[in-house]
Each structure stands twice: as C-alpha cells, then as structure tokens.
Length: 378
Image (tube, rainbow, N blue to C red; front, side):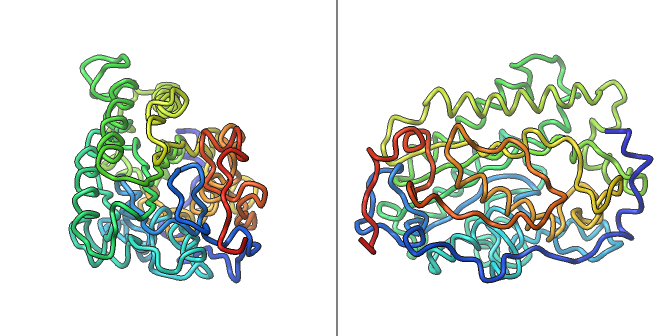
C-alpha cells in the first residue's frame, strides 16, 4: 500500500466529475421478459421478476462523496445515495450504471432505488438504501431490522408476493479498527468468525421476516482502502485509524480481508440458508483479486475513480464498480470472476444467459433444467 504514496498525485486536483453509463443497452427479448407465472422458487427468478431492491452497508453504500466537487474533501460528508453502485437511481442507465438502473431496464416499476442526497432515515432519499456511514459488520444487524420494518410499512411493497433483491457490502470499517482489538484471532471483536457471525445474524433477520428474497454479498476492495495519496493522508487516516498504525502491515490487512472473504464464502458454500426454496444467498467475488487501483495510463493512477478524499468512490467509480458487479451477478456460481480490470471502462454490461435466464444461484448454476420455467413470451 505505502509503495503507492510516491506515485499518487494530487487527488482533489485531478478529480473529474465524469461518469460511466451504458447508452442504449438492452438484451434479447427472451432474457428481458418476466416469468409467465410469478415464480415460487428463488432459483427460477428472472431479472424482470424483481420488484424491490434494498441495500445494507456503510458509507460506500451511502455513496459518501460520490458527487462531491473537485478539491473539496469536506464535501465527502454528503451522502449521494442516488449514485450508489448497488441501488442508486438518480440517473438513467444511459448516464450512470447501478444495479438498480440495470434492473429498471427489465422492470421500470422497480421499488427501492435511492435518490438524491441525504441520510438513511429519509424515505424520499434513501428509500431502501439502509447504508450508514461508519457502519461495521455488527451494524448491519440493525439495518436488516430497519429494512424489514420499512418494507412492511410501505403500501407499494407487497411483502408476501414481491420478489426482492438485497445487496450487502460491508467490512472496510471493520478492517480500519481491527488493529485496535485487544487480541487477534478469529473470535476477536473484528475477527473472521465475528464478522461471519454478524453477516449470518443480519441475513437471518431477512431470511425469517421477508419471503421471496435473494441476498447478494460483495467482497470488498483491499488495496483501495489501504492506499494513501500524499495530499489525502490526513483525511484517509482520519477515516481509517489502522492506516496510521505502522505495526499493522500490508500483509496484516490482506490477511484480515481474505479471512472476511472466506467467511462470506463459507456461508454460501455450507448452504446455511438453503433451507427455504424462496431464499438464496450468493457471494459476488469480483473484488477478491484486485490489488491495485485503476490506472488512466501506465503507472498513472486514475484519480477520477475516487471522491476528493481518495477513500470513497466518485460517481465514475460507482458506475465502474456497478458495471463489474452486474457482470458478476449474471455469471453462474462457481464460475464468477474473482478479479476485474477497473482501468478499462469499455468492458460494457453483459446480458443474462439465454440458456438459463434466471438470477444465478448455488442450485440453478449446477442444474438449470430442474428450475426452468416459462417466460411471458413462451
């Protein structure tokens, strides 16, 4: 991480307000169509069947600083929820890639996308984006309860009948305080087992209280949260205490990250939440192998990817990550990409498989035929 200090230029000065959209994107009508009958199994859900989207997480889910002006790191306190890569709905997909914007191509009446600037407790802004700046994995347990309560309290959501997609993106703040734990093992306050148990507790709340839901958990970027541009050193260390701890090395940070990622995969692979046919839990591991930030040219870090504090993502960064997240979502479990090239914004959005046009799950990825149902076009 610290090897990058000498290579990074003034972040705030280099930051641009560019964005990344997918103009005129579409797929074959056969994969854009909803099911002929509302599916009862999570393994037979087409992309157009999703009616509700939600998200749990921290300031990266709240999209702090995503629309902040260049040269103003203090503006990162603003939560640009409408730009969040998982759930933002400020712009069209032509202008800005988010999972919500892609899903609105399949179902224009999608409920839950966050819009504008504001906190998680303002419905008109957050909608079903429950991300809270500073949140650790233990905090998404309360966010899960809030999401359940919010879904049950809004008339446009039919909790029993609507299919729901909930994205979870958490862990950066756990790592930033891991070095302060009184001891270091898997059961420490921010150890692997503790992190895994927090994820399980939050997902169990959704599992027990929301029928017809798919839960997607993203691995998180290791290097980005541990790389400090010179001009943003103060802000970065303010936001990540362990970065200023010289005894907490790159290897330590990566070890904790890999532990968290292994914990997420354990939840998926052990089938802990496979007891209900209307529920699925899937890890989207595309951050796993990313070690370096994006580059605009060889050896030159692309600062337009970051907000002015160089810790959070810009609108362009959110669009870029949204693109890679979507492309990972449509890949079968067991064949999902574990690393992507964030330096290449021309990758584009992929389409769901025509042979298995459902949200890939642990079950339909192994045997799609057993879960195949007709679309409204059949």
